[in-house]
Image (tube, one colour):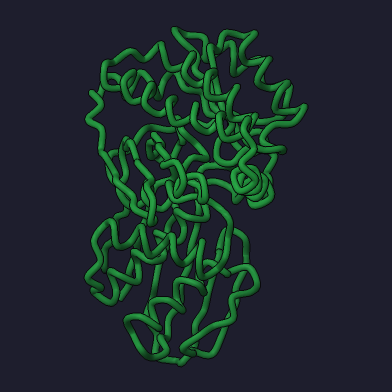
Length: 340
């Protein structure tokens, strides 16, 4: 028997950072994101040899353990072991013997929600194998708890819900960790136009999002007025983005992204740096009308809205930075699992 799953990565389009506590607990957060045709994949093969084998074939990494009810959350496969421990503790109530292999279509630290999407993919494969009674909100919530609470990894809440639900979603983050996912019915031609005009550029750099997010948390905890006001503006940006997409006003999106970029930089130190600023200004000078850095900031992917046929001049201008543009499409489905 072979159990497989895949979950899509996401592009954050507006409101990024307002899903992070304590801001979301105090003021409520709002995010607009959309999943794209890059995925986190998981394969589980049950075994009877009393071993737990974790594999990342694309990186030639393997870790082997004796099957136990709790595995040490250290080494390369921390996320995998976090999911295993939670599933064994809450559902299996005994050690599980298996081989589990994973792959992600984007590098860690690239800003597309890779870590959280991988957790959703792994958890989905376990749910498929063990026939766990988990709905979409259950899986997203559990993935959040594993990563943020049990493994104590800094970050927000949007990635787990995006990977599980899929599609374009306007998400609200309220007090008491309540999350409301509002799927948006965006006409297909508007999705296609956005995918054509929104250039996704990998800077060939990565970052430690935890440090940037901690700075954001500290700013809110200390009630620093400027960063908090910037987050309020990013909530407004999420509403602006939702209205533009639903109305098909696609060419407004560049201005909305630029609005968010100016306020995003005020949330915390490290969101931008001289290289990212130069890439951004070069893209604007070459025909982009706005853009953003993906995820917490500091590196990874950037996206730029390029109206008309400007994506080609923008892409050409960015070659000097030794990065690369990545083609993608928007996806309608979230987590998928199946058994062979």
